[in-house]
Amino acid sequence: MKMLPTITRKTNKTGVTGVAITDGFCHSYIVGDSGRRKSRKFSVAKYGEDEALRLAIKWRRDHELKIHGYSVIPASLVRRNFKHRQSSHKANLMERGKKMAILENRQKQQEVFTQRKKEYHNTTGKYIYRVDDLVAGHGWLLRIEFGKELVCNLIFRDSRYGSASDALRHAQKERERQLTLHNIPCAEGRRFRKKLHVANSSGVTGVSLSGGYYHCYIPIEPNVTKRRKFSVNRYGEKVAFQLAVEWRKEMETEVYGAIACAQ
Image (cartoon, rainbow, N blue to C red; front, side, top):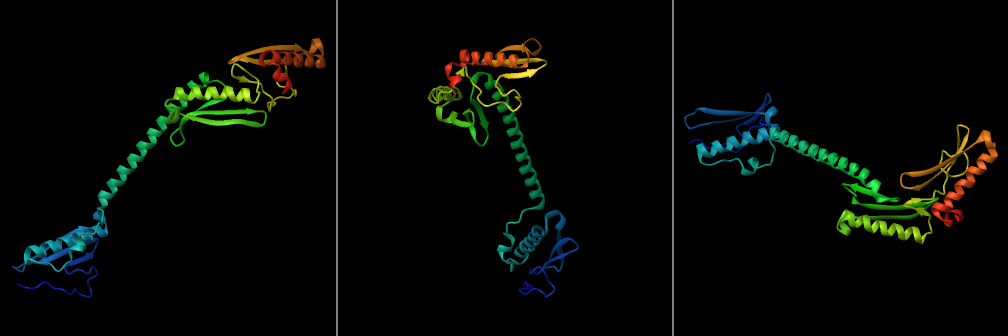
């Protein structure tokens, strides 16, 4: 029986006798005892060059063992971890599908959080906001501003207090404590606005000039506002403005108490 060669030819670029790369294929061949040549080729386009070469080497080594009973090719050459090109493509598609599913699930959850926030807005009262975020977590934000001062900025997490309702109760208790502590006028969860709105041109909160009238208004409870107007034609501009201001101050004292006038 002819012995297997241990030295490859100089023209062999693969480093393994009986294995060559030509025309986009990794060719593997061997001559049997009868002198008949067996061969097989592996497509580089289908498998990728590394995987096609590994398969060609493995085929050559398997047939050396089958025909001669031994092989001169180290087993390490056929144990290299090359991913099949088609398998890699399939794995990439699966990974992309998982990422898309995660994104869609997050979008659905965020839509639920947004809808829930709208429902909570009418029940929590002033200064308390719902926080639902996949990264930041879930809870209630208590944020109180009076004028230009940030009085309180605390978050009450559902995980700490056991449930959303329990966390909300703690946030509401803390809100009442902070309003009393900092002497902030408040009526039914609505605060006295000390800072002028950017669109206010009269210089007095709750007083505006429109359509020949000085309009004055004040929120007395959630979603309820009390209003009155004074005609410029009837009283004159200065008197109408003064009457509107006086009415607003009287209502501030009535709704918010004497604290509002002192601020």
